[in-house]
Length: 206
Length: 333
Image 1 (tube, each protein chain N blue to C red):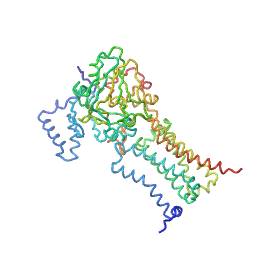
Image 2: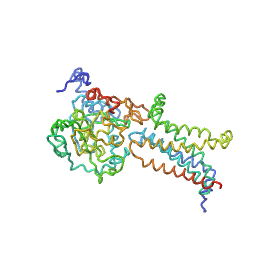
Image 3: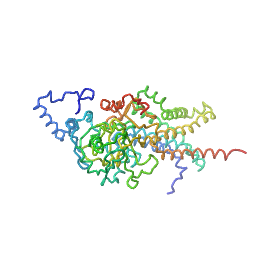
Image 4: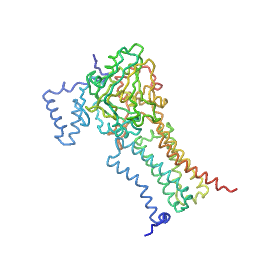
């Protein structure tokens, strides 16, 4: 039997469902581990950090779609972009929710003060606000309503989100001078942005 | 002589002043029986707490026993629920063995704790190198149950075994110009995989002002939960200063030095704006990146219960507050 090609797999009608299932795995794993007390001595901290990590990982994935699509000539990859973007938001919402709940006990007064007072939280929260704008305009009709140009301009904010996320992560790790992971993610995001710049320069007419 | 007053929290009537002796003795027997597991799991957990209140921390049975008599020092024994040994020995900050709190438990097993000695030097009349065996015998081992508040916003309740550091200090007779005590810890790149990384300046060093070092609550610690210290908790000998953030309580001590000038300390050198020399637990002075007003008690305040308020000087204000009278604690954080 001949194995179907990668492109054919991407175009399969279950492709999106499979990716959706895979993207839900971290969430299912965390939920199960939380319920069975497998998250170590400080489950709240574990959840908060793991959800932050997964937000960042999905951000890397969604920003990798276009470079991969273009450089490998796989237009079908574009089918997954919106869903991956919404998973960035999904894990960001859970990350913010676990901060508000486990750290702040849903005391909105305290949360507001915390956001205003601490640059590290403020940066993370700003990234979340931008992501919210992108998530709210992620449906097809939004493109029509806004006009493709304006929609695209708005959605370039994802690059700002990437910067804010790295800064938030860097700040969080600065207390322990423990930047190895920060640099790895920064390098991944940086090279994805660099590719875009290179691609634009290369294809500039004249 | 110790004077008990309401200021140090010791004005409570002793229960045996109220309950007839025969009655409470019977009750204690019953409680001990229940703690032994005879009365079912649910009752046993309550009973073990009651048994604890009488001075019998259950040994986890992992390491050699190190018994200590329940301390009678004011503030030295909190009646709060003990943190599980499993959590206290698996959730540790010990950067020589990795920066993740799960790292030290597996990585620290390479630490060689025998032979071990501690050099006491500097501005003292009688500098000496003490072997661990000397130190263990230097004064009577006591059991003290302290709250431990980490600067990261979590806390534990741990039954330590040791004696007041002042016992050792008195023996070496500090000179009049000795104003500070520096604590230097082991930095052995062969057995400590993260020594040499750029996270901190090695060896990890800490420091106390002389009056802080002499305070009876400052514990030279050899054990916990009735046994010798696990390696990841700073074996074989460490410091425990219960009213300061946990990082002040240096682990695996190899040198105690008496100085005139304030010594540099590891975290202060790494980030002076975040970690001060004093680092007293203070709910009113936030860390630049998070609030210190509340804390999560490991094993208790978890996903569904709220964090608890952090207490001034970690609840030891009655015992230690006087040392900081008139000091601006916002400046001297």
